[in-house]
Image (cartoon, rainbow, N blue to C red; front, side, top):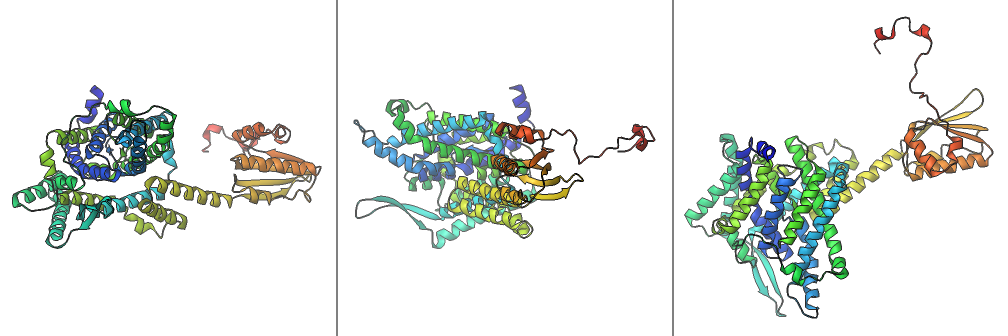
Length: 553
């Protein structure tokens, strides 16, 4: 505890103010995601508090903000709806059964994430190429921008002639639209200009407070956090301190059918949550020039989701928008995340009326500035300077993030990058041929030998017309996979089938282990060399007239 306090004290002021700013920006976004998933906003806010607090204290990346994120929320939409339907088909029908399935799914999601951390799967985030990172940031910036544009509308409940209820959005017009735009620009102007005057005041928080005071004292009729919640069908922010939800254990059937029902959504949510959290962690690493612990973050995210599910909250993960706001506001330590969670809970319990007075325009202005600062504008500058394949990956990831999903975009980007790398590596296989004085033909292989290069490797040899003795020198080659092992085995079989002698030289120790495990035949053809032809040392003492210590090697 003493060590924890020692670490949070140096940046305490900035962390506290940044945490308060982030909590204000988080409320409307979490509420919006709750409406997307068709759950009670308080359920999402409780989840944001619990996950945010646990990951801030125990996570592997100080400064990273976690909460009920939209990337996870969209996965639960169909499961909740199907869960409601299943509940009504029970022998004793249960209303809103989808919410209980949701809580169980969030718990299972957390368990999967903890296993990912325990088995150190967080290290695989290092396999994400930089173009994928840039595409992820750009795509997510566009998604956040489009989400804020929707704030320039009103929701109204309409009933069709068939009796179907649905919320319809209509965009603002006239004076209302102009006032909204003016307040957004005012907020953005304060955030942009205040740091040029003084850096002692947090720009985002100051902008929110100034805009709110102008709206309150001028009596402007504008959209606020409170009106936004009511438009979405909510009743306000007033809530209670999260407590264990005992209804989960009473109503949820613990059987194989339930596990089958929640398994796939839980796995998808866990994967999306970890990808977004680890990608956000990488972004913070770059912004702060420090390094986080991905495996520890996986465990903390999992623990947060388990507790959230048990306490009746929804699932969540790292939130790039709020994290960037936190870092830009000076939040660097765990205290900023703790302060965000505590402030969020305080607003829900004690200051609900105050937070409901904050105009949506102020929060939209904060998010717009975050989008401007997050978007990798340098990608336009370097677009013509990087390989075409990287440019394609960058654009593809951005588009898939916008039109499909974050996790899918990252997977697509990594797969394209891997295929391009495999293709380029496959073209690097080379064979230099020479004949020794005794008539032995030597093939010196250069480049990686793997599934992509075996065709080019096989084309280098002519078993029928080669002399009786063959050596294949692997001094500058690597045997990388099963396809490579199979190619070498078939080549040995082909030469031996022609009645010729073949030897494999200068294989590295790990390559020899692979081949020996594959077949005992390799014991007869691999030459256990101890010399490396890349290094030539004079063995004749006459070559060293002075003591070795006087030579500058």
